Length: 427
Ligand code: C2O
Ligand code: CU
Image: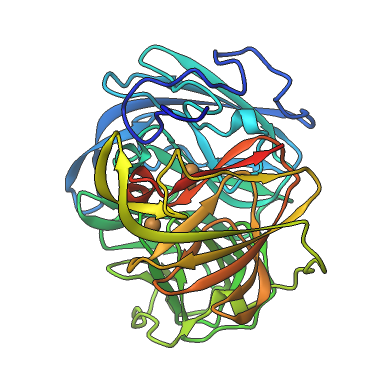
């Protein structure tokens, strides 16, 4: 029943839909609304954007900018986003990466809605019950259109934010890694902001690229205060660095000292300065294992079901043609057997990477609790984007509490488009 879906390529959407498409109609799949409604309008359009260096890049944008508007709401509010399209050559949707939205709001063309075409619109509505750092992006041909700029950040605050508390997006535009912070264009190089000594700082770093980034903070001791939007309580770090998976988020927290601080991510960085002093060199310490850093989550004693996903690179039929493909359990999407779950269950997944490449795996609509990585027990941490390195085995657990039919896929989106995608379906 799932053949012919179109999200990874440009064919029109197939018939299967879990919710009625259209603009303002509210279906029974829509979530409960509560608290004030915060309305946003996002219009997808092609535009030329200018990086901090002055370099101009042809991009796909929301409201003329990439990243698109930084959406920020208070926990408990209802988010209502009207998406419109002025794109002539492709459809567009909004997927709320990491956010546990009702299935009908998940923005997967061919599965939860039809993509919005030029002149059309779609309204997303969900209650912002879950605080933290998230992001949104198109899910129609995302391997092309997300890279071209159709994304932005979503931040849900439990209380009024304090100090310098900003989403920081890392994205490659035209081959250059950039850092985007509120109030400025994407910086291809180092962005600089002035922050008074003593100010609490929280950098909500999101990796919107297809591969991992190594982050570090130098000039001040810091903590990773949240992983993929979920608070963690880990030790204070000095010069250590941490790898952030494609799609993942780390909240980096510290108190601004009286000298500059550098958040570095490879060729790009964010320099915070109290007004004077020289920039410190980028962090160069050992790599932290985020699965053993700071999770205090409770692990269930038993699991209701278990699945194994073997990630590989094999010859598989795509469109009737045998091609070397990124596979799950020997198959390419949509022929990968779905993981079937029932509401209320704890489900264990063993993810085995037999290919020679890194796969940043991303389940929609849920976080997974990381139990172990390569046989080493984790300090259990909730993640929605996790890097399974070549040869590694990850054991993760999912609490089935968000009914629907969801995608799970590699967030190296060319791998997903080649088949490394499957469904998580509630029976
Ligand atoms: Cu950010 Cu289906 O992904
Ligand atoms: Cu992959």
